[in-house]
Image (cartoon, rainbow, N blue to C red):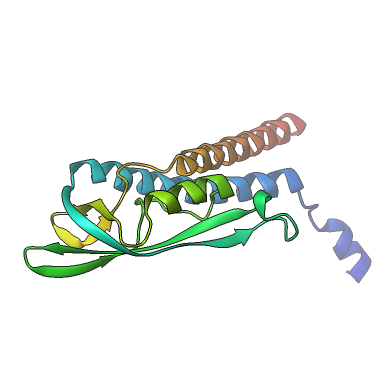
Length: 171
């Protein structure tokens, strides 16, 4: 068998199927990861409270337009100290699902609320006191990303299913 006839017998790549599988894998992995983040965020409603002193509060420009900083995304760097049963702890999370997905206006609101030297309520896990947050619950950006991950998974599943149905009808 010569080389040209071997190439003609090679199967064509079905890009719809490849894209479908990629979307299922990416969407499925993100869904699992983000759903876990949602569960952890909801658990913070059962955590205990303690006073915390803010010692670090600044924003970092994260991404987007290099010329217009108002259109970019920001991450808040926060640090706070708190004591539980005489033990000293340091916290760095605003909420359990911190993501660098804040617009400038959102970042400024958080920086005003959590300014250096202010005393805030920290919520800590009674079983692991080193785990603490300043805001209970779920970041709304996580819910939007979870919706997007589910959409990827559903579109990928439909692409795979459509491909299988069209393959069966051709046979």
